[in-house]
Image (cartoon, rainbow, N blue to C red; front, side, top):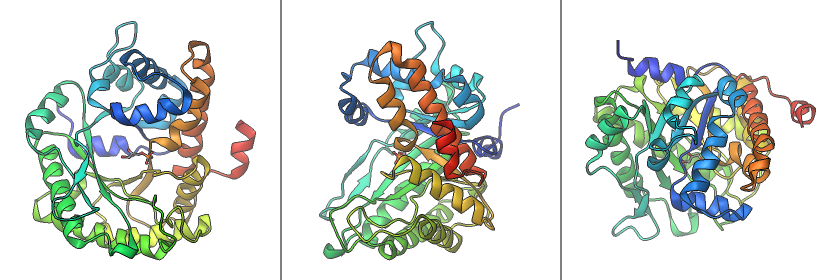
Length: 344
Ligand code: 13P
């Protein structure tokens, strides 16, 4: 019997678990490897991903799904087990990043649109055969208040593409992760938490309009939003305020039919990303499950502990397990700062 979109989404939102975003493209993993002095070869990428997916304690207890890059979905462990099978055996759902990246949007200086719709139906059908049961598409919305950005025109283009992607996924039995990321990086000191709130609210409203217009079944998708945070150079606020504003913004924009929200970390520190998620789940009172779909905030410590050396694999797996456990607790609203110390 085939799984329904709702079955897959429910597995991805299992209690106390979340999604490992390990879908760095070859270009993005280069940046991560540069930080630890590791050469970006296929062998090193394979070794690093094998380390993650065979970290049994982390995977079995705290990871409900893994987002892969095309190359990684086709790779295997050194002893010949396909990564998709290893992930499934650990009880997690294999997923695949299907967008082709954010490119300059014609006639919208400084803004981007995510490409990758051409031929997407065929690629989804192949990915399904390779074991993927969910997909990810990331739209990028930059905030530059002094320049009047973002424009609604650019947000609408991205929302349209997200909805076309989501519809194609559902047609092919794949749960779409819909990711409109309002970016927190940027030089602007006027980029405060209110600006992030307004831009995220507008973006999510436009995205859900498009999803409706394109007949996407909201019960068979996962939303991957940013949290409501000030820009890196804007006035900072407390972790409590981030959590409260994020819950407020999502309650105002995300229909209750959506089964789950899995946040990106977006450049937050490991502990801030965990604490924000924990506070939101303590606040509660919303109709969806809320968990993590972190890339950097799950992997930074692990990458550093590994540093490309075979003898460091156990320490790297322990670092991954620690962050996965902290975020698993946060998804239940049970994380406390003391947990970081005790386990360290
Ligand atoms: P970060 O958690 O590092 O933002 O990555 C998550 C992700 O998948 C971005 O598309």
